[in-house]
Length: 380
Image (tube, rainbow, N blue to C red):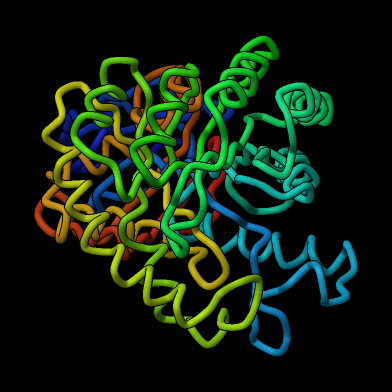
């Protein structure tokens, strides 16, 4: 098929004008003036790669009582859990995200595999299937846990190296524990993403050779520079996660440790997180990716994170878009397949009403969604 376009943001910082995209068997085979097969006219829209979300939680949902689902108390069948996750996957895809890394629920594996079969609509999924933290135990226990997740088919290892921002984000794993977790994952060919809010927990993760620091709301310049020096990716979550919690406060309060004091801690963390992000933008060679920590209530609104980064964080629109394209693809070791609109790449393509380089809120107006050459949302 052919996509007729006027403006393409290629996901790598380039802009292609007045060219058509030809797609064969789910892959981009030509970008030029030629037309072939069925033609879809997208000349009134801005084209860009499908978003690559590096930190989501598709299994998180509200129960029929409109409260956050608490797996430790509420009865829910596996079928119900799977359907909630499938609903969230659909919302995420329709919002323009065509790849989602989930950190991580065991049910993500079934959702991943179902979507890969090509019938169920949803983003391409990578999953950690669970997480490692202080509850896992000593280094030997952590080594065993990494191998268990790898044997179960995990795509990535999720590690909690600090407490929640709601209780100060203090370190929870030693240097030795992190060294074992990240080195064992590397032996199994897996990346590691580390929940670390403060400088010390992030520093330990960087020195352990972990792949990505998640959140980092309390980081300092020295730690950010250490991350850049070691090539560690940074996934700041400064917008959607906070806004969603505040908008759905009553859905969370009283469940799984969500308290009034915890919400007060989050409110105090917002300006700090934004200032850290502004600082990060000035650190040379720091690789910033696109993740949101999307939980119940946030699915489908993932691009709000990019909007916050531009409007409140001061990031240039083109850089925000690249972070959700090539940048995130690179962090997932998938930059040879997705994240860029170029010949030979998977046809993960979305189209927006408006130009996000002029008005970043155009990211809210996703009118066309294609994943691997299959159209899931169309103007027609």
